[in-house]
Image 1: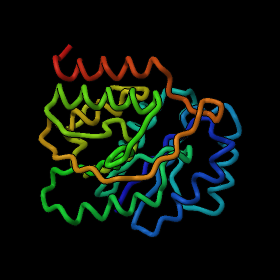
Image 2: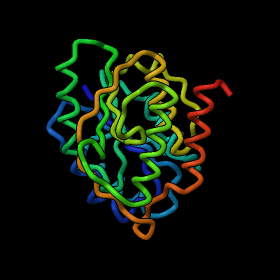
Image 3: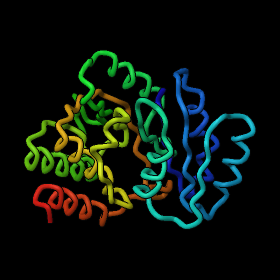
Length: 225
């Protein structure tokens, strides 16, 4: 069974369209939605969706950040594999079964499957350049060969939770999880996925300071700062 963790914050405008494709995936799954202190009508939308779909809803009274929501979901997860899927339509849920299929091709229990937005693709723009820099820094510091360290689609075996000691409360949880997997001896296999980036006017929440937090997290993990 795959545990799909969905952190959500103030996505009332998108949730009704973004979540059903995840709920309807034809795989053995459990879905854990963590409403991270939303102040819009997200709670109402989730209630309406619960009348039709089966998922576990966890509500955090105060917004704590994506990392905090993900960690809460990980604690609740019961699947053999785990993955996080944002509720913002940037990632295509139809890529999740393909990532899950890759697990059957690897007998080694210490393999994580990452969905890469940039594998074998030519990209431009400042968003890509920042991600490229952070991934290159990760590769330099930890001897990896990744193309997309920051990807949301990190499919990991549940046993990996024993090797993860996550403290990030915002988006720095992405580099934190990546490098802790590397340090614990996991092989990360990348699979190309689709990606449709949204702008800040459409509700994108990651901020420039999160890039700095990512750098600090990488340095902390490498040099035990």
